[in-house]
Length: 116
Image 1 (cartoon, one colour):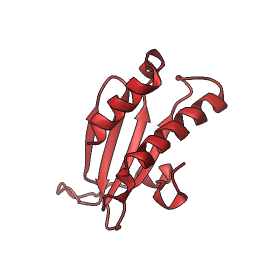
Image 2 (cartoon, rainbow, N blue to C red):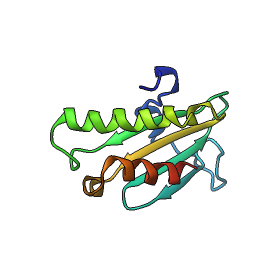
Image 3 (cartoon, rainbow, N blue to C red):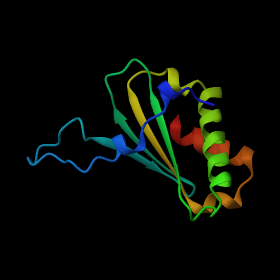
């Protein structure tokens, strides 16, 4: 499991405050990558390490234990790949319902493709 220091609070990532000026503020700029199974949103941060958040909706499974299992697996793969040691990124991973069609090895490869 990924240490709490490297976990991104989901509420902090989804702020509703937006700058009023048409000039894009760097604080709100984000990169979005997507495939059929994940949406990955990446923001820059001033930290010496990266933080990760995982959102697993109830459409994937109604049972919270199954959703937490998926969340723990994703955090485990991030830790194995040592992605949290790269500096200066806040990464929010949203798991999509189509993930139910894949086995764990394929899920891991699809996720690491998006994060690389």
